[in-house]
Length: 145
Image 1: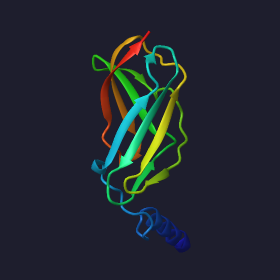
Image 2 (image 1 turned 90 degrees about the vertical axis):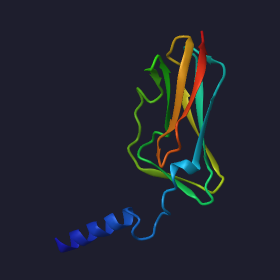
Image 3 (image 1 turned 60 degrees about the vertical axis):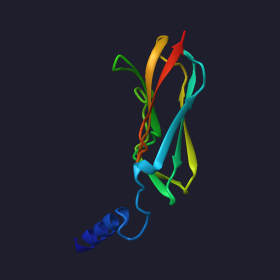
């Protein structure tokens, strides 16, 4: 029993960084997110959402993801979510990390085979699913027929 408790304590200490593993997480104010997509946006047509994060800190940033989900894109109309990229998807449940050197950028692509919204104006919100995470990106977009 004593051996099991010692092993468990070692595992907890290692995963919490007490043994000097990963550098401390950088603040989200040092990370900048941008979003782009294949244009024009068309109802019922494929779209690739591209999330790009940049590390504006003078030191490395470690982004921790709690699943296979890199980020999300939401389209809203009149304050209501009409589309959420992750809405009907399943993701692996494994913690992973991406390291970004000072000034480095990393791109994450979210593929949508058929944009399931009607033509019209939408508020787009893009977010990275990491900890720390940069502030979400918000902008207006038009979906064409």
